[in-house]
Image (cartoon, rainbow over the protein chains, first blue to last red):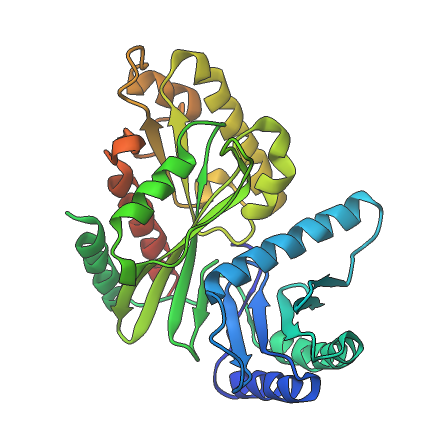
Length: 163
Length: 196
């Protein structure tokens, strides 16, 4: 509500997409995502060889929740922040890093992608993405939708949930 | 605030179900999940304990459809109601666009309702949000309980100025669930429209 939001479109979106595509290529990861801290996907890219990813909404929500809980833990321990999250299983791994205060970079990789490479290129990508997302910040209250949209959405509410 | 993804042509809103433990927040979401057609919803994610108490949150994305070329989606969350999970509750409120406060109609939960509302006010304040500034609707759930308190008595405790809409519900069989969700969704849309 009070914090600004990231509105990625046009040139900023293209730039962020390019960074994620490069990151996929450099790391050999399966999927890379840029999320906002509320758990909404801003941009995502998939390797052509990778199978369809799990539901991105759920993935983004869980990662944002996990990152928020990790930051709360850091503060309780007197750390300003824990910069990265890394989970590794027998086959898959997940790496998440903060992009400024409002976004997260997520890299999902399998055991053919070395973790060191994922972290190295992940951190480089974060530097670029931080600049892009800062430029795409909008203040709350400036992203209004028009009355026509409002009327259309209200009609859909009736259709989905009944009159 | 809502997230508008111009590139993917999506508008996303975050709605949080708040209220004391066992008041029926998850039951509301389960009903929505059961009733909304397959092509209009995503997976429901529940982070719960073995006895089905919400540990972190439940999450359900619902697609409203396309308006003016924008796919509109509501992300529904519940918070854990139990008092000692406040750290988790606070995290879930980040970026919230609208709130459904689910109150329990049982007499012995009246105080828990009041405490949960006070806790909501305090947690929102940490994000710099006043309760009065956010779309909020009340739901008096478990109206089928034999000793259910009058709705006015419940509202007097959680909304003494009687300024908020309140819906009676029996979430286990869906009564009042969609009405409540529709009301908060409309308030959220109206708020964003008035910002434009």
